[in-house]
Structure formats: C-alpha cells, structure tokens
Length: 109
Image: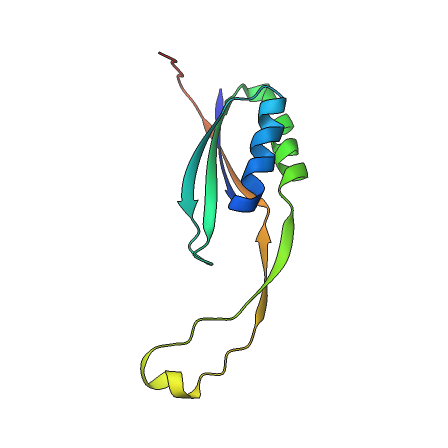
C-alpha cells in the first residue's frame, strides 16, 4: 500500500478532488501554505494500492498544470530599501509535488 502526499495550489485542489473522487479514490484534504510565494496550497492524502500509483499520478498530471505568474518581489527593509527598484519576475506556479510513501499498515476504525 502507498500514501500519496500531494501538494497543489488552492485553485487546482477542487478540480483534482473531483477527478479523484469520480474515479472512486478516497482523499483527505489539508490546508497548507507554500514557502516561496506564501500562497495558499492544499495538501491531499491519498491511500492507494501499489498498482494504482501510476493511475493516480496520471490524474494529477492531467488536472494540475504548471502556469506562469508575474510577481513583484517584496522590498527589503532598512538602508537597502532606498536603492531598491522592484522588477516584476515571471515564475512558474501550479503543477503538483507528489511524495509516494510506503505504508506498512492501514487500519480504518
């Protein structure tokens, strides 16, 4: 058995949840925050059998696509702030981070 710990942007979470539930996968949703953009993320826990891993990752790939976003860096504090000229930077957001973890035992009570 495997546990897929999947981190996606909030805007990708609902379509992914719907796609997984439609295929009869059980999913637990947790709110989380990303470190880079300080934006809302969703962490999904999906417990599956070993042979289902590629199917679930395929659903994640189809649902969570990377896309570009333009951000303006935060101004530094202190003496450096006077000479700081912010330039918008395009970064890649979206997609998913998927950790596949071996599960020794699963018990539903």
